[in-house]
Length: 485
Image 1 (cartoon, helix red, strand yellow):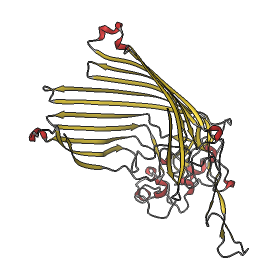
Image 2 (spheres, rainbow, N blue to C red; image 1 turned 90 degrees about the horizontal axis):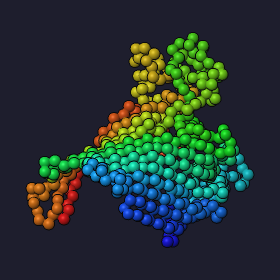
Image 3 (tube, helix red, strand yellow; image 1 turned 90 degrees about the vertical axis):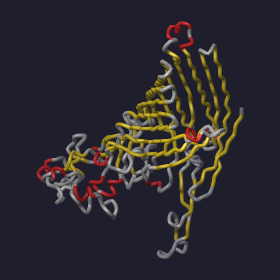
Image 4 (cartoon, rainbow, N blue to C red; image 1 turned 30 degrees about the horizontal axis):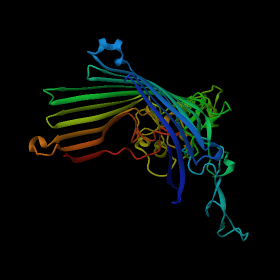
């Protein structure tokens, strides 16, 4: 079968550009004796976002399942084991999300980016010229992700359902904006193919459903828990190559290199605040004259007796130790209730907003933390309890990326709660199956120790886990009526 599709993407100037994705695929499915199931797919995709030499990629996938309970030797388990299935899967997919003109060097014209006084004068407005807006990379190719999966499904005593999956995902030729020297100006960097990253994980789910009181009461729950680990196996042929996303006011907060997760937080380690000048004088000198009482005590990580950029290290990461979800439901004589709880544990967050409100990054209001918890504040009984350094007009060295900004962002959130009642139990209207009134709330509460507005912001990309002041998840309450005829 031959398929072609086109999509439009809007540019910053309001115009539209066309890109096309072409696919050819074939699929084979086979089942033998309701015991062995096989499905295989091969697809050939082409994207106009790549140059002619790298436009097409071939991506196979296959899955195999064995329904063990249908084997003769499993007949003795019929009274308690209703289903047992083993699954194995393999597949490749391609990624072309690099924008529409990555292969081309583009130019723009704007008075504030490129101008020159044609008359040769030193004053007056210049004439607008052209500037290099982006650098092209005609050699970029598909990013390829290969996933393998081994799983098991089981149903026990009709009411219990179990599922477990072990998976491995390897991404090769990752698409990432190339870092370019500042001397090349403001041109946007093109995406290139870099290295290899590997993800491993396990997903487990258990569910239970049952009835009582002559089936008038129906109830159940579903619980799932997931854990993953990722690691960059290779970035490039250069062993010391690092990846950083765009800076925030000239500071980088994330970094990745061979052997690390993607991404991890990168900066200085703060070991407290200097309580006396004698303590400051005895500590390794930081940044050529920074050490004073009331300032941060930065750690000499490499032990060379001087604190500088070489003492930056990995100080946390946004990846949770595990995530989990719990769904509860019941239905009794027309009354129904269901809820969904979600938890993330062990993930860190960079509270970048603190740089605005705790320090002198911008003019404007300051946090109450700045007033009540700064070293030397008259509101403190003891400076040893200070959470922030002393107030200074120039505190740029206290704003450097460090463990001060990294917080535990673990949380438990009620994603949804729904209550309903079927009025047809009272009205008993013919030709109407139900008339259900319901009230539904989402994001009703969040339990977390994170001091920002929301522990679940900026969850993707190289700057994952950096809270830049994003609008928090809203709480919604909805009333409605469902009618089924």
